[in-house]
Image (tube, rainbow, N blue to C red):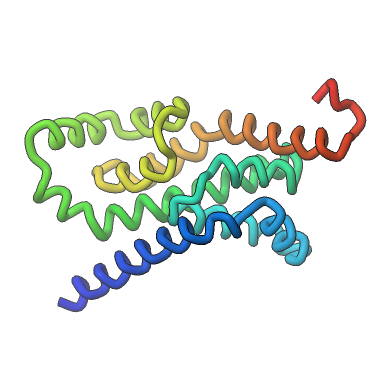
Length: 191
């Protein structure tokens, strides 16, 4: 009984967080993020990664965060911080789905949905790698959906981190180049 109440409480917190993120999305812009990070001084990278991870759990757009990471930290460190924050958030969403809804989904799935789930589970890390390399699948929703499967956490973590690297590099560099273009930096044509 106690674990069921805990599950409902955590579910309510998640739904509330997502609703607040949607309601206040206009207040969550690059300027506000830049101000928070600048005020954090040496703890800025850690703060940024925590914000990115929490944003991932609450369905904030990852591409915006990745662009901001490139603008704030540059292409190399920005990629590291973006990738780490996104992966931590993806793992948190994966674990939330696994521990709070996977049993319920297991009981309710049947027919085609069960076949799809089993197919994903059979492919394991290869499926994770595919959906991370092909940016057609919604990142935040995918994190929760993969948590409903029996893919091993270590496989999910490693495939997510490594296979998001190309996209993280591209978006981070785009954020960096955009900041340089706005600032009128030298070598603008080159960038």
